[in-house]
Length: 420
Image 1 (cartoon, rainbow, N blue to C red):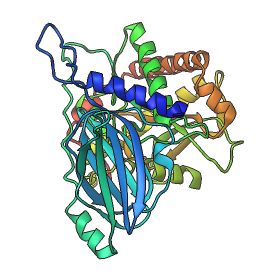
Image 2: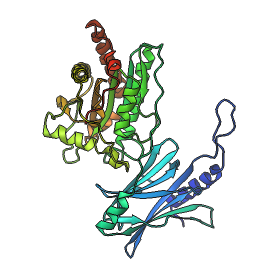
Image 3: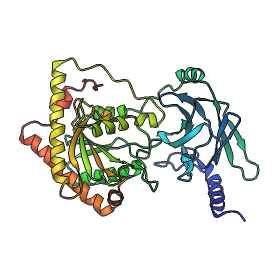
């Protein structure tokens, strides 16, 4: 008899095929926007004679484009938006040239599959076949073993980085402080992964949404998110979004993991600095700065160093405000959550490199700690911590007003470049 898992997959496929041609609901009575995204319900690997094939089972055909990248070696497949309904273990099985693979929303209307290669390989002809028995579409991506030189040449003509959508300018008549909340990772970049398969990107997104709700409920602030769903946003783009919106404060939410030390737990608040507080902080920043590579894209090249004296003074002032907010935040969080042994640290985080927006990165805890993971998934804990963070933000802006330093420095230095 068919296994329970196979029966469930067949039922999912039937539903996906039924919905594949259904139009997306329109807004304000407009015409339907088009068919719903294709649904992926299966991913299989097979290797033979130097070729490994990754086959996706889809509800309908989609166009696929592939390229390879070096450092680390990856194959990247770009697709129209796909609703991935795959088993949680799908991307973790190693087979032939495939070490592992990730998938998810890469940009509005676009999905991406990133394949970590076990050896240099090029992408052969991607084929699409309709399965006769049920109408499912099999999209097959062949990876063919290649020598290093051939792989390097293929990678050199790889990904033209897609342009990111520009954010709308803030409303000029609304003078309330603007807070940019940044949920780390997203889309094809899952971030840290707990033993039970919980993704950092999901934990921090839920927390970020709760924080936004808490801040908006008071009506004192304008609040935006760098991502409002499970989508990949490059690190430099997160900084650009905050600067272009002329944000008054940038708060990046993350969760760490140390599989070799499950006893380590507690929250840490980071601010930017060229020299890290300690080796552990430097390693964390290096790991977080590789987020773009995890999503199958290269980090944007950084502009040259600041040369203008006014811009340099702005940078120093911004770092002072960042450190001040970090201390205020630490004071509010310590009574309601476990803090790490060194709760305020510095390191060279790419996402904190805005010269004119005070910025902090909060590591809420460790997914590798059973206790921290339970807390991170607790609605009561989340409500308590977001409430304390909102109080710290209120104190930050109250103190700035008391000092006679309203959030206008960012406007006078709007052209200052992001530090490398």
